Length: 357
Image (cartoon, rainbow, N blue to C red; front, side, top):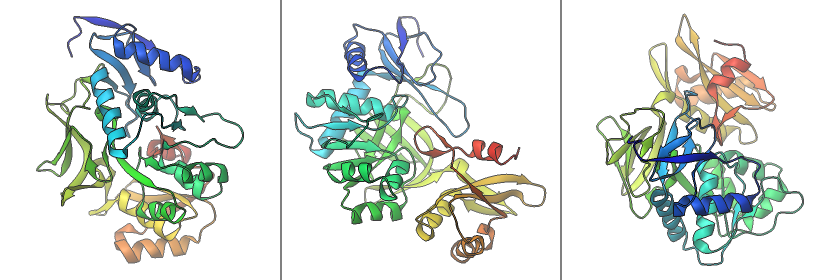
């Protein structure tokens, strides 16, 4: 990335008052203030056209600093509001941490509508009503399994964007049965956040599947690249994700990350398929699948689960639906699933928690 013409970078604290953050965002967009960094960003300078730097939270644990222009992030906000048919004066609520692009997007969508988002991150008492909000699947799960305050808030909106991690069809159906209008979103920091809603690319966004079944994204919302890393994922026009997918009748179906397929005893096992089936059969439990290095199997499938469950029943369900290779070698009952970023299972942390290398 060309760093000849540089701009100062200012790190945004996650606990700063929202009014101050909105003022900083306005000056970053106009070019009268420094570029703003969200998350763990070490860079102190950026190219002059970069307004926002967002640290990724990849499954490898290696953080990359995604460089975004004001045009890209504004295009994302405008396309999102257009998809939702959002009107001037309508309200967004902020339920996500300001270390991620999804939270920044809520603020900029609000600016586009001439409003200030309701800051509910550390809010006490009954949540006020908002027109739209954005959450991750974990928050939706909690709303549907005991968090009545959040449930009422989601039910009162016109639409709830759910992204940041895989949303199982079962959890989506349960939300629908509770009269929550879920809009599934797919995207990442490199695309200014969600850029595919309910399987359809937003205005100004193009998607394709390459010969290796990887999802590729192009368009107005694309990042300029990374500040701290050279990466061939960007070719100047397209960004190649690490997600596998297919397009049917114009709808994108995300099949999971390429690095979340394990090989056990010579058999390929999809972590995504495992977790989706567990969500179907054990909707009241949070589950995560992960691989452990094993001399006999190469990679052994393990399951971590929160809450009481019949281990034999769990193993039987996986074996019957996905084959003998999907029968876990061990099931761990834990107090809490560790996450990386906003809703993605931190499988490295699971290994560490359970004392595996």
